[in-house]
Length: 402
Image (cartoon, rainbow, N blue to C red):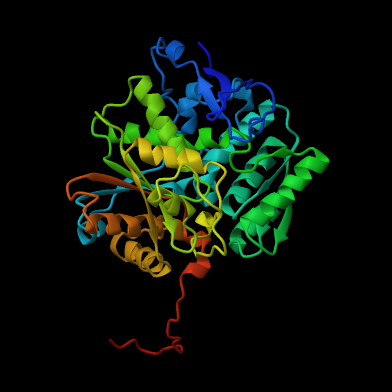
């Protein structure tokens, strides 16, 4: 019995094969690499899922870490799938649910990718790495690297949420700010990788972050049991989570663990101020173009050009999904509405997803009786500037009058 059934890395564009026990970044053709598993051999196992564990490592046979001693964990995964009845009634979606990723360590879904990515880096003998980030990924990777004994160099835009800057700093990582976007941070990291030989932990430039993110898909299918969702909406910047969920759906289907007759329709949600995937989907393209002058309060999805855009678009086309862009006003309104109706202070990216579900219900793309899952990717308290308050100040002994 193996801890992992990982077999190799494969390029989805040219088909080149790479070894998983050696450090690898992009394929020589420039494409991200995907992790493959010996699913036929795994089918012979009596138990594919380790149900004694209550974290994402319950899926360790479908994760790339070979030696359990290399696992770096803070208890991430197995986040709740919550019914949202009051909001669902407002939106006209009777069976509306939220997969709440704000409940993981570091307060965002980025902990999943960090857990698996850092664990595999540790197994590969990596001692230092570099990455650009819009905030939450850098925070998660920094804290997991601290636990693993790996030194990270993090570059983030100066406008990234301040709390994520503090998380990086307190972990002992080397933090640098750039007066620009994540694409500018990426260029600085690329130079560091080239000149100093750092391991590049940029989105999809290492193959293992996606393996952590895909466990959201496994959990959704486990939590839904015999009634899988009809639609899954996901806030899309780099798109790793959506790519991962699609990968998870396919792997469970091949293993006979998927109970539905067809895969859930996947929806990529972006902000109107940065919507390269939406534009490409509307034009039926296989890749997106760089989005000039991108801007949105949903900072995690402010990615002008994703290296894995072709994989995101493939997931949309293959599941009969779609891509939707929402306005800043819709994001702000829905963030407050979700808190008032459901008691959930979600992040702006999560609010964008609920706003998109409203749009898709209104135009009939989502039917009233369909099971719809929205991914909230982080806690709202990590974005304190997304909410403005101006309460009255009382003097001692003053009486509140209605």
